[in-house]
Length: 139
Image (cartoon, rainbow, N blue to C red; front, side, top):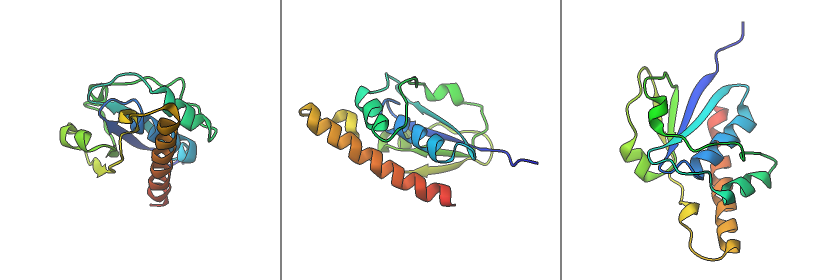
């Protein structure tokens, strides 16, 4: 009998970059073990730089949409992972034995400068997130 997949929600403020990349990475690396979602306290749109950074490593998040964390209230989640400090402070309570985890990453969407600088920061944050997810799936 197959083991139930663990449900993971990545939570960020805008659900435009960090949480979207984390969702795509975990689904790509261990989607057979996890049902993966992402949401934000103030959802916006998926950042085009996040889409490009993920496409560079063969992960397509172009079809993702930015979602509100309220869409997940009342659902049983095994892990809620906040990927920005603001989301950590405003994360709602979820029912059951939900493990809260906090990973703080710089906000690449707030980067000022030319496109080259933005692309570099998105890549760096993507790689930091991937490293944390690789450690997470080892558990």
